[in-house]
Length: 261
Ligand code: PLP
Image 1 (cartoon, helix red, strand yellow):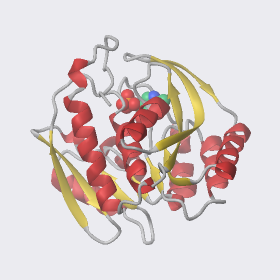
Image 2 (tube, rainbow, N blue to C red):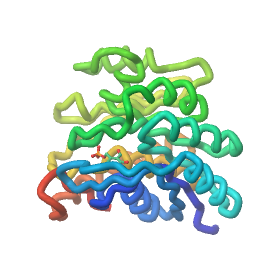
Image 3 (cartoon, rainbow, N blue to C red):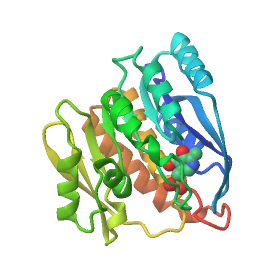
């Protein structure tokens, strides 16, 4: 069978640990060819996002249409978008390709604490992009912002937050519980009908930069390979666990280094 193709629409991380660079590494490792539409350039290392150079919404649309015109894209992952003009441009462009599954990682803040999405863009994300998503992959701070509430502190509150995020005919949701702490990292996966808890061991490492990007890119890779959403999510979690387990062998920068693909 030919190697399937997935597309990542995300920001570039000059340090190579997150964003487009993490996505391409994860998709390649999972046997999928990665096309990339860049939404913003970040001057970034393992300690900080120094500055962000935006890409114009028109040029982002041009990239999307040019890729789709020629490449047989089987799944899309969306990461950092920056502001509402980019969100609207991406949503408008993707409406032309409605049957392609979309993994939406609602990137808001980098591990360094730097903002990757303007706070006033949250409404656009919720109203324009969420309806196009097949699966949404928020961490707890992002999910709390989307639901307009405080961050949950335990599994019970996390389940309540998931209930608030569910929408009629809305996307499936992988609510990532890593921020709760504890010995195991429990995610809640709502497939559109049922909710199940996906537990994985917490891996202690300082090298956790790009974990969210890697997970969402790996899910898109699974969907491009025609896995069911459940299989794509569980395979992606296994991939991320391995990437975190091997991360300490990397010595990249002095801050939060990247996971090992
Ligand atoms: N930089 C870019 C360009 C990203 O797309 C992302 C994605 O989440 C990040 C940084 C954040 O990565 P992390 O939260 O793992 O630092």
